[in-house]
Image (cartoon, rainbow over all chains, first blue to last red):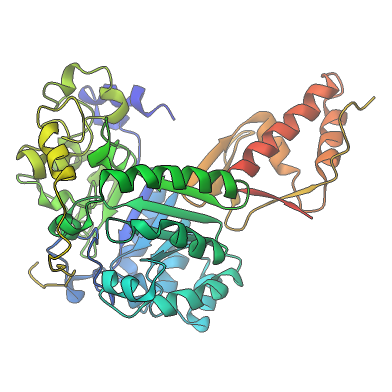
Length: 375
Length: 95
């Protein structure tokens, strides 16, 4: 896609902003798990503020018209919405590819059938570890055994199946066993993601941050597994950016490829954007998806590279990684317009390396994800 | 004369992959976590995957349809394209 070319014309007219390709629909923040690295914001949306079936359906149709291809139904736990099958059907009716990201809790044979009949095309099931006790510890719930039983149920249904695993200091030493367990569930895809430090994960960073040796070893194990599984299971990996030389192109670029709608209808450019000061987020309750994408100040704030400072503004890589992650820049440097400190060209990079290499604390207590009704 | 070995493997799209029509001779292959926009030859090859035709059968049809073009090149293109999809796990070969 030639998104960049069109992006450069942003100053002259907003009409040329290409539409997003994926819509992340956080249909609820309620969740039976309390994962210590959850990507949801610390301030979550309460059940009574959630969008209705009809509101979501309208959002899906408008998103599709704007160019969205993939719909990711997530949360929280999407299965906690009794109308989930209706949401799936609405997504398909809007001609979207419908994916669900789930803990699996609440998934029964009957529910599975209902979702399949509604047109669900892809399920992403999370695993926390290969060892039950540790898996339940990270999830803050007794979930592991149930998850393992679901694989057969999913495979029977002719639905694409991905196993998602988040890896960190406390489970990386079992990565071989984790990969073997994931493989034994016979999915089409496995995603292994190193923790990204936002929200709840940032609170638990001291305990989650892997050692350099663990990171090194995980890279080797993952590339070996990719070679072994090739043609059978697609293994995708997300590497830890604290150890990177250049930052990740966060969410494919701000306001460039994806839009996230939170349970109450706020449109966000990424999972963590609500932490950024001075941004106003508009809602699908008062605006169309197209308006939000093209005109909301939050989406325009860090589009393209007009907002960049040095070293990003003069960097030859500015079109490649677009300055990295705004939220990480804010969290670690206090200014969201700074270079992402994951970049070795950032003058704050030294601090990041220090954090990454400081002795992590095994003894610290986990801070579990808990839904508070503050907003 | 056919110079390659016979290829009787039958390709089919993996679970969770489907074709979405686009205007003109383009199609979009929707896959979990991605989409491939396919034009011209690629779109034509994909349209011939029906779960029954072998790799050779698909190549034969295309060689007939495009009789004025280099037949060996067409066969090679078909295999190359299918292998690319196979490596991404979006296309499987039935045993």
